[in-house]
Length: 312
Figure 1 (cartoon, helix red, strand yellow):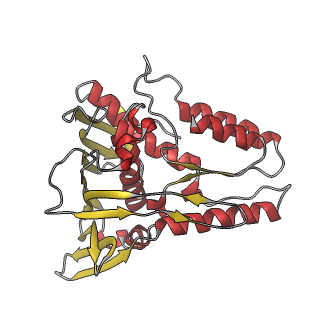
Figure 2: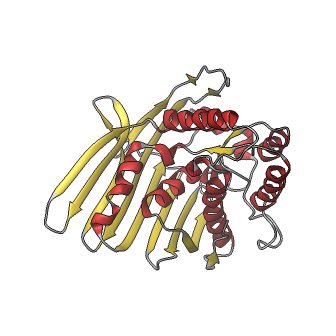
């Protein structure tokens, strides 16, 4: 629904900041090779841009690509040398106490909370490694019948550079608090002449980390809390035994909104000529996140079959 609405607004010449996921999963199609919603949407968007002077911006609200922790850690990836192994582990407790639990749109589309939440963690992974995922093999399961299927996914993946990794996500864990943290999301209103509004809320227990092992060191990002501030704990362990660590409070939502406002301001000033918006916000990037999870979901439906990730 949101893709259809976004395209209507774009056709009217309006700039759009759309909620993630960028598009619906394609796993229910009889033939997964069929054109996905994201592919169809991009085709329509390109046609719109070709017919309207001053291309309207289509952005997807993916804050992980703007979190300072990921931005800074990406700069240090070269220090770990060639990547040898990657791990992404996510444990969350989605239950009736969380308002997201009752969101009809999250419960009624393929992939459920795995897709809705998972695009964040895939975006963080892609941001860090700077290399696209080429293929995946996954096993999925549905344990908590109160949640839409699946609620567990365990996948191995291979990057285009040959490095392999694992992606494990559980959204129905009952006791992550002992080793994780409680996130309290609050309502945020952004008042601006462009009338942007963001609403988030509710407690959610999470244990999340990204770990990349290289020939010269290991880098890890972990969700954490420091002096009452929620964010990410970064650590780097070098081959010489040296360790660096830093804590970065959350600010990705603010940064992505600032970037979108800057982009539409510049596009308005340059109306009638093309303006290249920040690629981290682009619909294409959001579509790439969805394509990876889509491949994992299809592999799970096919009992772990190796699936090539669609390219955008």
